Length: 126
Image 1 (cartoon, rainbow, N blue to C red):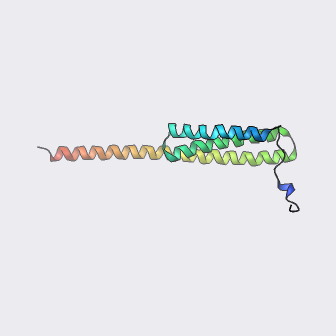
Image 2: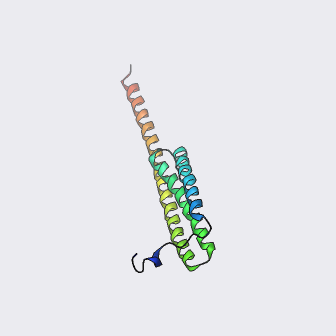
Image 3: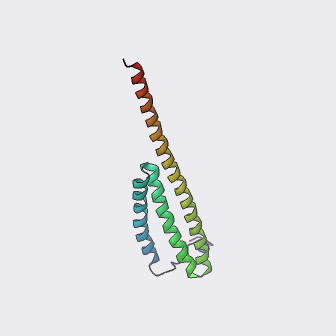
């Protein structure tokens, strides 16, 4: 054990068996978010955005639980978890935007190339 390290360790869970509850929530929220991102936006970026949004949601639940505890350590942990939740939601939103804009650009590019090929076929025709 190192001197002074205990003051930086995470506080005890705010609620009894909170660690097990957060693990269970994580095991449900992250795959569900990934699946939703894949179905709604598609591709790797959509899947990552959904999974990251699920993880950020778990961090938000954790922040609220620690904030309601009321202790100084709990509030400090709530601020850290809230920050990570906000950063996670922001990054998930960016990835979601990027995935959906890439999807639109890809669709319009393929439509444009199809239209050009039709034009060239008609032009070369009889």
